[in-house]
Image 1 (cartoon, protein in one colour):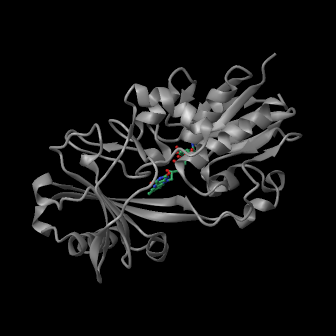
Image 2 (cartoon, rainbow, N blue to C red):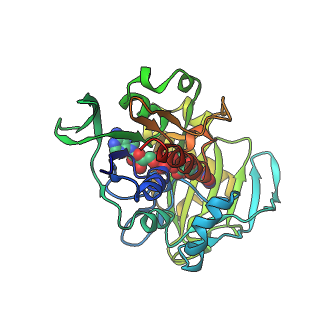
Length: 328
Ligand SMILES: Cc1cc2nc3c(=O)[nH]c(=O)nc-3n(C[C@H](O)[C@H](O)[C@H](O)COP(=O)(O)OP(=O)(O)OC[C@H]3O[C@@H](n4cnc5c(N)ncnc54)[C@H](O)[C@@H]3O)c2cc1C
């Protein structure tokens, strides 16, 4: 009989793992958000949309290129060739060339996950709150204390600090204590395209901001609905993580306007998103691609072990799937 596997989190890592193992096991995915995206989310209202997490991705491994090939053919993934600049409060802007292909999903970054999630058993708006040992397997409970199901195996693909809250530390091993995830603020604005500078995106130095993108100019977006995504640096976000959020937003808007010379009066709406676990700090153990405790039937994967990028999430899950297949 095929084993039952619960996967916590339906970001790129969780979906990759589910797809890789779907012939070998019954897979159930639990995702606390209302929709698919994770840190590749797209936020929408009636007129505008913002990719407020991952901005682009690279595909360096053959395996990731193979996954992307049909999605590139269908237009779900598109190479992004932006006019990109470098901004700093104390230096003149200069153009920043890219030397390898960079991709985005269209019409929103979460389109990649929507495509990968088709035909999988995904329970959205379901936060796994507790994982309890039971009869040689595991029971999962939601945040209302309701039993979600009984499983032979549990894999967490949640960001590491959330995985550490859910799975028993003694079963995950000591290595994880050395890993760290860093926060980031995302400032989301609407501004008419005509009021924005000519570049598409900017890497920012010597500022609380680290990245600015005129999100509507990405391939497959509505060019008339001008949207800006500006990300803070992780250092600045860490120093201001618990500050009043309105103050944080106003400060970041001031920096954005000073850097881009956009008139504050041109901004027609503002939002702030706080990512507590956005990116990974340095990778302490380059050989650790996932965590697997076969006797306990527990595992964890995600971008955090390989450097906190989209392709890292894919690789971690794919390598865990390979290892798990020999244990099922
Ligand atoms: C601001 C920002 C900018 C970034 N920029 C880039 C970039 O330009 N290029 C790049 O390559 N990468 C970038 N990244 C990183 C990239 O987004 C991640 O590496 C990748 O999306 C991680 O995928 P994942 O599946 O490992 O994790 P996630 O996408 O975080 O997926 C984990 C999922 O688990 C869910 N979850 C957590 N806890 C529970 C629970 N208890 N129960 C149920 N579900 C749960 C979460 O809701 C989430 O959907 C950026 C990230 C951020 C936040």
